[in-house]
Image 1 (cartoon, one colour):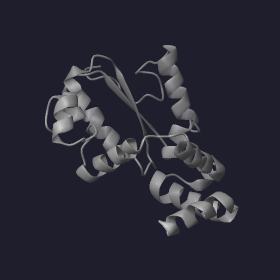
Image 2 (cartoon, helix red, strand yellow; image 1 turned 135 degrees about the vertical axis):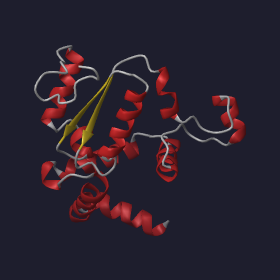
Image 3 (cartoon, one colour; image 1 turned 120 degrees about the horizontal axis):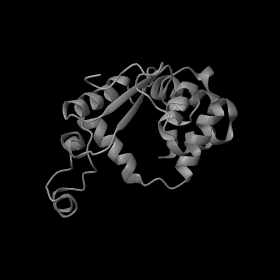
Length: 180
């Protein structure tokens, strides 16, 4: 605990230590190249989310998803799961994609190490297997470029969808709906 507290204090107080940690995170955890986004953005993102009060159970859920290799709800234990979900275990979301009743647009960063493109493609495939209208857009960037809207083609795609000007046949949207 003392070592972790010391590391936290060093990262917070020393720009060179912060830059080293941000470079390591951006290269190996988040994906993409550090030159594609300023390191202080990652620093701000890290410290703002840590200080913003993100529930510890959210971090635990991410860890459970990673360990189990399943996209599922939080596991509270058998008794609490029964109360919350009506079953002894967490809900495996992908097994319930048949209940989705809206169009889904997925965006995958080709250099994303946190959520690799293959994981996004798995969701796309399951949605299509259930006959759902789904589209996938790939961008040449890592996780930070996607989440902080620094990938221009990603931002343009999202704005097209939100603004109602999205067309699956337009240039830049390479995957038309099934049967087109």
